[in-house]
Length: 194
Image 1 (cartoon, rainbow, N blue to C red):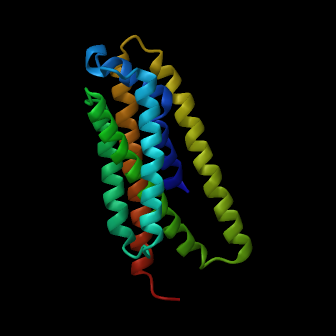
Image 2 (tube, rainbow, N blue to C red):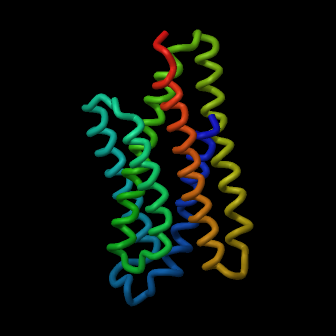
């Protein structure tokens, strides 16, 4: 549950509001060319959804067996992409980072689901239902904490510092969430088969 909380906290770091502020601050109007800030954000969102769908289709056709490897890669890519958003200075760079970010997020979600469903098989019906409900609640709590935590940061006078805080805390949350999931996977691999 804690890993899901931190995952959702990291997802909020790349919210529409944060990305719009980032585009307006980091991509100078001449560098935008024919793009507007909102248009670039919409293109990144569409590209992100297509990338997420493609990632899900590719992973859906394969059996996710090496959870630890995928978790490590997706966690690192997610954290790195959040940090790369801060230095994206052209529309192409921003779209490339958005593509990597969304793919990492999709891989992370799929591997997270695999880990949870494997663990849920060991539980009884009532415990499984309660565990899955608690996991959903942890995700929603992470979103709420993230959303309400971002607002005061964006109100800071130093917008550059605010964006840095948001993106680095999101990267840290992604790493922490991934580490917690990796711990569950390692504990399960070391446990004797039931």
